Length: 55
Image (cartoon, one colour):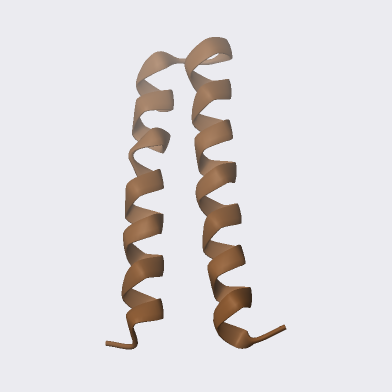
């Protein structure tokens, strides 16, 4: 597996885990915490796009 594909998969997994964790927090713990963790998803995906662009 190429390094670029591996990094893509890792960023997608990190964003998915963050999304699922935010849903868990929203429904079972605290809605504010769920929103806070949910904000991580676009940040992780943006970082992944920056890393993959090579800049």
